[in-house]
Image 1 (cartoon, rainbow, N blue to C red):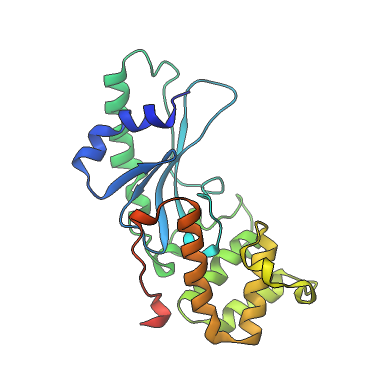
Image 2 (image 1 turned 180 degrees about the vertical axis):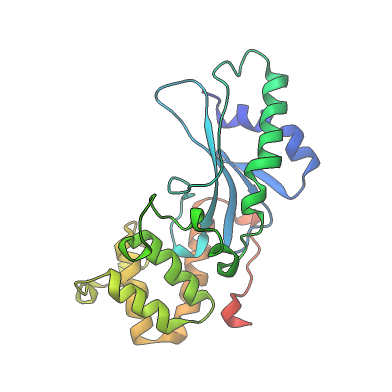
Length: 227
């Protein structure tokens, strides 16, 4: 299993010729980061010594402070099991697969308008309807908030969070590690004071970037609903 340092060395030719890319914590991603961390995540397996990779788009303003590529259904790549036998060939193959196949699908996902055009990156399980997916519904509701479609976001969250959870919402839920806690917090904000919704999304984005230790690569920008 290649370590993060070994992966970075294998990817060095690509990183050297592409200043719009960086590699941190087993993730290859586009820079600067704005509302989305988009790139390729390299997984760890208990069953073999190679590493698989999947292209993903992580919506930073969902408040989750670790890269969320486990739900992606994007392009996948599996390194050869004998990757250590010829490191030059492994590096060439890996860089080519990343540049030609894994990165292009997610390069343009810089806001919700582009995100919603690519269902494989909306955090749904295969054959799952959006209305049946808390994670997918939250992803879309956040996107709707980002473009100031607050009515649609409130209805979507109200439908997926039945029975109504708002009696239990407290300030600590703002940064809850549980998806449902953050969903309920956003719904409460939508119902109580919509002027606080976009500031909340900016706060969640900053929280996520700081948690991932990616601040140096981050460029804070307005949401479409603020322009």
